[in-house]
Image (tube, helix red, strand yellow):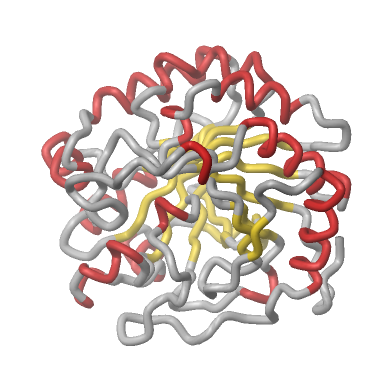
Length: 317
């Protein structure tokens, strides 16, 4: 569906839970979050109806997010029902990877096309520090399980943080040499837990190109990511610059939170409820939300934080 600024909105991110089995420092409080009443959250049936409404409007890509979506009870069944929607081209999941060893084969069989794994360090000690609870080996095992299950490509999302993982840029890029792995470096956003990080921890994606000058531009974008590749590599590298390069003109997505709020823009606080609506009512609300999608967000940097109104775990990654 085309919005009022000529953008083709063909992508929705649907959060299925606010809960997570990790406590990443820029995302979740150490004590976790209070589990909300079941009645406040979208039911599985409502989530499938929302997906059908979105596809009927021309959206052909759906990403399931959280929190951590794999802690959602019935996640495989939910994915199977969404994957079966006629007209859907791609169903993806963003996960921290720690449960993929258990779920990768079932997700693939259910019709999930692609996995994005959030991974900010390849160092075991730093992984325990940034996640507060996690074990890096679980993620490595999950990646192997995903390839074994049949997933042909894996995306790894890495939030750049100066003084934490900028010394690992070359190691992350090296993951793309021999396997069809796409590493996407994302600039740290001043939102939620990210507000507590010192300004010194923000580094531009330009740092990646300075550290790895042999990266070659592919002269293309994939969504909001500018794409690069090492010569002869099996995978590729994406740079996502929400701070250093405003890309609102190319935004093609809307978001649905786990409690049923449509967000036309991640970094603005406008939300429209679809919980409790019929599928046709959801379709009408989504259509209007797409038409009302703002042309651009406000300026965003360390001194001008996101106006999202929620932490990322309550929006969806």
